[in-house]
Amino acid sequence: MSLLTVKELTKSYQSGKVAVDYLSFTLNKGECLGLVGESGCGKSTLARCLLRIEPINSGSIYFNNEPIESLNGRQLYSYRKKLQIVFQNPLAALNPKLKIKDSLVDPYLEYAKELNLSYFSFTSKAAFVKQLLEAVELPSSLADRYPHEISGGQQQRVTIARAISIEPELIVLDEPTASLDVISQRAVLTLLTELRETLNLSYLFISHDLAAVNQMCQRILVMKEGHLIDEFNRRDLFDNERHAYTKELISIY
Amino acid sequence: MILSMEQVSIRSGEKKIIDNVPFSIDKGEWFALVGQSGSGKSILSRAIGQLLPKNFQVEGKILLNEEDLCSLSPKQMRTIRGQTLSYIFQDYQGTFTPFRTIGQHLEEYQKVHGNLDTRQRKIKSIEALHSVGLDEAFYSSYPFQLSGGQLQRASIAIALLLSPDLLIADEITTALDSVSGHRILELLAKKQKEIGCTILFITHDWRHVRRYADRIAIMKDGVIVESGGKHRILDHPKHAYTKQLIHATPILGKGLLSGLQEVGKE
Image 1: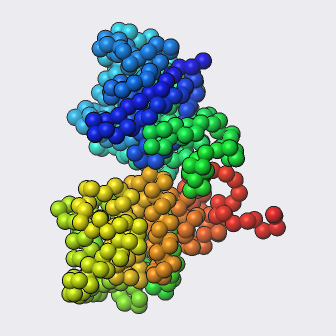
Image 2: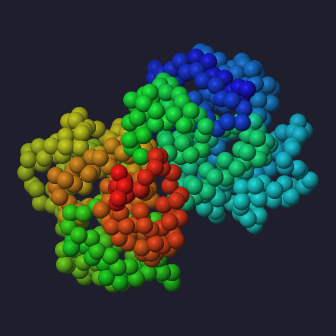
């Protein structure tokens, strides 16, 4: 069943640069879809369009068969309850003046009236924060710290905990491990896969690292200069029919 | 042997950051120093060129071409840095002075090391840009006008301008995407063949190590836990930490990590 369908999406900036050019794909419920491409190919612009942070020029985006490009402010509010994002730079994504526990409960407090959580349960703020930190394998002593007092890997786990706190249907992961070293990277990727299975989430995993994408995802899209040039199942990665650019990416590893 | 470290320890106040590190690098090889963030690999590499702030105390001997760098005066160090020893850093934006053109950087580098002929300097600068795949137009560009990959190419051009004996490349591809990073390293490998310089390559990415390195040392919390040839380390790691690091890296395909064929098999 398709959760997200993107049809003929085009986005250009005022400078005239076409960042995303006539892109179409679908993301099924429960899957992790990988999106690979080098810097400047339009991956992050696509993510911003999906979140409606960035207006699009033409085309359409369907979430649960509902078009989202025409949603008004109120409708967007409930749309964003189902869609969360984890960015590359966790320190920029966390409010430096809020303690970890305050950042963690922020989305919940925003949506408290409409939420019906199945995995987590909100009895008190402290208990909820503890559950979230446990889910991402962090000690509960971190709750009273500020973002700059914890390591990069821990910060990224906090932003992941925050994203899953309202149990969204889809999480966009925009280079979530690019700023981490290998060991933290491995741990975060394993954690994400476990969370996807336990919480029945779907991911759009954006990265320039084909090997990491291959480890995480069932299906992979390859983007170059705004175009979608290749789309395949993970097991067909080494297939001879792959696009020349995909082969070039494979040869790097 | 071009560089050798004998019982090097570095402390900042009470804290020991590098503990009794020995290693040596042979002429012309590509030596990889691998470790996690915070393991002390960058501090160690900076100690070689005496780039550390004053509050770090370096003990032991660092021999470059049989000469103990720790005993040299700041003035002698200045002639060595750039000419015999050069650096490329991870932060390509911090490498360049924002209000000077790429050309001015190349010029200054030569002027400081005694090339006083203006015309010759410009010819050499442009040649250097060509050799890293940048055309003449970049000579008068400012750093912010270049992409990350282009800036890193310019860094290579500058670092290799005076044909140093030892080049220290500190996480030079970490801030780039995998495609640009790959092209930068291909370029560096090609230049190494031409010039014959030795490279101390600091990284946490095994995929680069297995493609380019000759020998490898693994560092953890300021101590070298294991070192040896590429085949030995990648295919038969002994230390638990090395195994953990290798295991953590996502790779594509199968077979031995070093890319060599297993003996006795097809």
